[in-house]
Image (tube, rainbow, N blue to C red; front, side):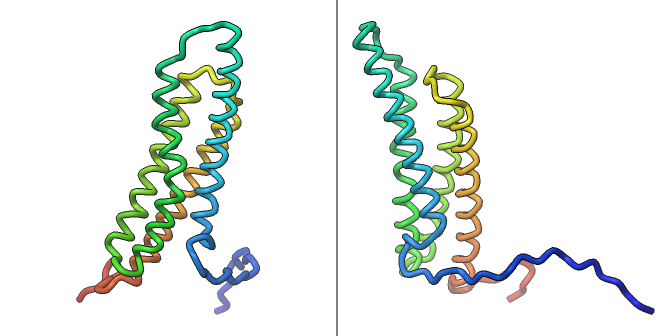
Length: 165
């Protein structure tokens, strides 16, 4: 009896570059990219709004101000949290895992902030920017989850699901 197997599409093997610091982590690089994109767009929005205010002398929108005050520190903080988690994991595994989980939480918060900013503020920023930024944060969060799972394998006493001790 001959068995036929469907050959799966194989991608060529590319070894990953060795990690020398947190800067080599794709998660860090993508989180930094996201934070820069968001900061630039918010900065452009604030600059455009300042020009309009000079002409019209209208009061500032408090919701815009509140969203920006919360969104920017969150966006700019995620790369810092990845760097912190990378350092902590060598000495205190649990603190490192907690730090990467905090970064994942902030990715979720950034998605909410971006959706609120898009839907509430009349920023003039194209919807494509928001959709792209949200997709990037979802990607970064998924990568962080995989990184966390990889780090857990090196924790003392780690057991895979289904293993008995």
